[in-house]
Image (cartoon, rainbow, N blue to C red):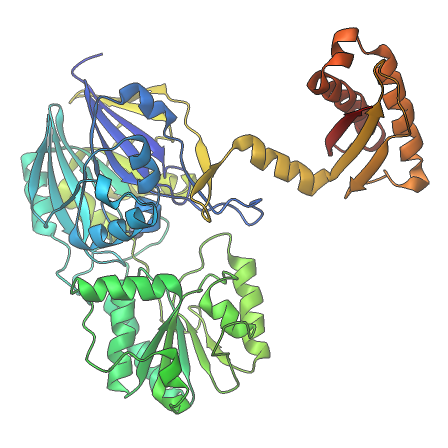
Length: 552
Ligand SMILES: [Zn+2]
C-alpha cells in the first residue's frame, strides 16, 4: 500500500533492552537505534541477544541510514551486527559516536562505516524523511529525541529521556523545540515507558550530590563507588566530591576506564590535573586519600567489584574499614547475583551503602509527571508507548488516558514485529512480521545458532550419552557397545542400562535396511531414535545421544 508510513519495532517493546525500530515510507526505510538485550541468568553461554535482522533483507535496497538516539548498550550494542549485514551511514551525537567508534573498532569495522556526528537542533534530510535532533536529559550525556518529518506528518521518537532542568553536564532538555513541534502539529509521539509506573517527577542528576558529600565526610577509610560506566553525570559527581574531600580517584574495570577515557577526550568530563591515579599509585597512599571508581554494580562475577570482594582482583581487595557505595539501580533479573556479592562484601568487613538507604542513585527515565510535560509539549494526535515491559507500556497508556485526557483509540499499544500503519488520519496495526532474537557469544562476537542453545539446554537439563558401536560388513555388532553417560538420570549400571542399550542396538541393527546399514549418518540417526524412545519412555529424560560407528 502506498502513501502510508510504517513503524515496525524489531525489539524493545514488551521487554527490557534491545531497542530497535524500522520506519518505512514506500521504498525508503530508516532504522532508529540498534540495541542489545541481556539474557536471563541461565543463559547457556549466551552473553547478549540482538534483534534478528532477517526480515530487513526484503528491504535491503531501501535502508538509507541508522540513527542512534544515545550511546547506551540497549540502543547501540547491536550496531556492529546490523552494519555487517547492511552497510549504511550512521547519524548520532559526538559522544554516542565516541562509544560507537570504540565498538566498531572491536569488530574491525571502523574503516568501512560512515559515521556522521550531529549537534542538537541539526536537521538532516534522508530522502522523504527530514530529521531534527532534539536534546534530552538522561543518565548519559549527548542524548537525543528525534523529530522525524514524513509525508504523512511529524513523528517524535523520544529515545530515553527525563526532564532534568539541572543536569550535571551540558544543557537541560530542550522543551522549547518540543513545544515548537507541538504548535506545528505532531502526528505521533513514540515515548519512553521505562518509568511509566513511577508517580511524580524523576529527580535531577544533581539530587545525589548531598548523599555523596555525607558519605565522603563520614568515611574514615577507602571509598569504593560502583556505578554504570555509562552514567557520565554520576562519574562527574564522584570526581567532583573526591576533589572536594581531597581524595584521589583510581578507575578500575575495562568499561569504566574506556568510558572515562572517551568522555574525557571528547570534553564531557571535567577532570582536574592530578586527580586520577593508577592502582600502583594507591599502594603508597593512605586509605582516607583514595576513591576507587569501579564497574560491577550488578554483581557481574567478572567485573571489578565482585573480584575485589572475593580477593580475585590483582592488586586490591576490599578490607575492613572500606565503604562500598552501590550507586546504581538493580536491573531486573540481577537481584540474586547482587545479593550474593553484597554478602561477600560484608564478609570482608566493609560497610556497604545501597540505593535503598541513601539517595545515591536517580533514574534516567521519565516518571509520570515527566511524561505529562513531554506529552503536553508535543500534543500528538497519537501516543505510542515504547521502551519497556508490557506492564510499563500499559501503565503509560493508562496514565495518558486518565490524566492527560487522551481517548483510548489515540493511544496505541504495539508489540515487537507489529507493523503500525499511519496515513495522517488513522493509525492501526495492520500486519505482524516474524521477528526473533539472535544470540551472541561476545568472546568472538559470533552468533550462536538457536539449535546450539537448545542443545546446551538439553545437555544441562538431561545430560548426554556417547556410545561407540563397532560393526562388521554385514552390520553385526562385533562387541558390546561402549557407553558413557554423563548427567543422565536412571542410566547407571544399577539400572541395567548397558544391557538394555545393547539389546536395543542389536535389534535396531537387525531391522535396519540395507541402505541404512551402509550409510553412517543414517545408521547413527536410526540408533539414536530407537534409544531416545526407550530412555524417554523409561525416565522421561531427553539426553543428547551421540552414537559413533566404527566399521571393522
Ligand atoms: Zn538509555
